[in-house]
Image 1 (cartoon, rainbow, N blue to C red):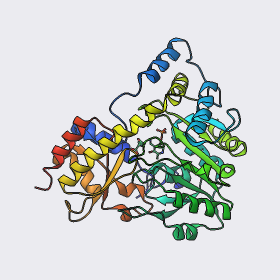
Image 2 (cartoon, helix red, strand yellow; image 1 turned 90 degrees about the vertical axis):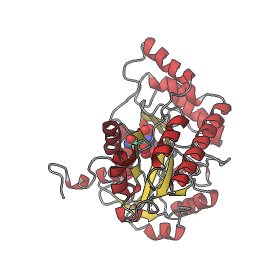
Image 3 (cartoon, rainbow, N blue to C red; image 1 turned 135 degrees about the horizontal axis):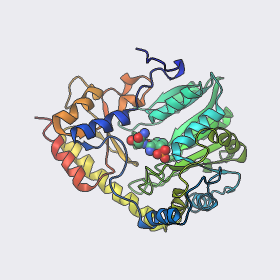
Image 4 (cartoon, rainbow, N blue to C red; image 1 turned 45 degrees about the horizontal axis):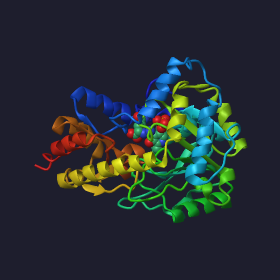
Length: 388
Ligand code: PMP
Ligand code: GLN
């Protein structure tokens, strides 16, 4: 089925699943464990800094690169957590969320017909942005329960048209953290084939069980070929502020800037200095947010197991994936998500949207646990009736 008016390159992209499912949650008054956003505010220092910025008149266009205070805070953050240095004037670009960083990077770096190698499942935006750039995604599929990265398949996916590898760790929707061995293997492939790597690290502070985030840019030979993307939304519970950034070598950042300036030019003026305050919070803040979310993961996962799902425990992020087949014999995760609000008043996301071939993820569904404990408990008590 073709969508009228829509260009050939965007055919098939439809409405994002997040729009569809959040609208369904509102319409049915369901507990929304679909779209990944927290239901509590972040640190008061960060909120106060935004209010102060608005009151003190920082309400016009910020500079194209982003306000200096934020770019400097991003540089300090990369040094403090990962020991890697960047120049705040030439190697950092503030964007309208990680979303615009991704879009600008792909639009800036890809020519029509180029290929992007990417592990799947993958965040739905990747395919859309590649399509807008006229490029295609060559997927390397990861399978539950472990979602291990198959490096032979990664090598097999590289062709003469491959321009870049797009990596997301910690990973949405699986909650996987690529381990050091996998990252080294990805780095080896990138160096061997002289590829650029774009890494999406928006969940960099939300790792569990003592795991540490390791940016790919810290591996030998990778800094000069890696663009690292993150944003303040997940770390500071400010997903609506859309303050993101991209850091990397000056040449690559300059290319991305060319595309970015014609997308939004700039955004989020008063929120930029506020996110700078957040990035400079003491280490304990970052320890605490991960611990809080880990407890929420444990609460929801235990509930999903009790409800009868096959649960793939995540190592990070907001999300847990389950196999619905124990509760729905035909294994149709999309139908399951469409019916769930009426059946029991809970909204989830069908993972098939995260695959280039939806059949690969048909039986999988994602729940978000970035919610208050009482909301998670309410969702679990509703889901427990399903098996009956
Ligand atoms: N990348 C991943 C993996 C995501 O889950 C999201 C959604 N939050 C984004 C990028 C977009 O981030 P932002 O809201 O900062 O644009
Ligand atoms: N990244 C969030 C998720 O995966 C929100 C995505 C969105 O609303 N576009 O749920």
